[in-house]
Image (cartoon, rainbow, N blue to C red; front, side, top):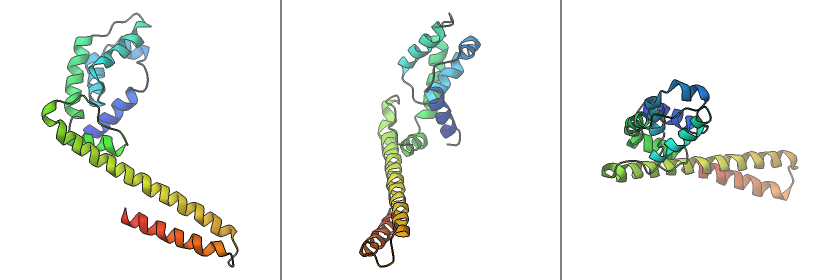
Length: 162
């Protein structure tokens, strides 16, 4: 599990940009494939590497990339990683083998649920900050003050229940 999360995060970061000229020239296609697989990239993602490297007159080694990607998928397609992907607010990429896909989707849904709870807590905390700012501006005799204090209490209870 310890390797899965960092590798998935590294793969996500690597997937955000085209390969550099240095990456293309180094030709570590198995390693690039490993990173892509660990981040859940589909097999068609090699096309992006062909596009990026064609600018430098380099043709990727698709066979090595696919070997690496398959190894990377072994890291991506775990329950721990599926859960982690969900906690980041993302659904699992449809690249895992059918024999364990139900368990992976269940783990991913638990992670997505955790992510949603975190968002709800963040929103409630932000509303509490907004209320506190309003309360600081209101006089102690303001009729609105009691309503805001009650709402803030409700939000604190909501956070505890989440």
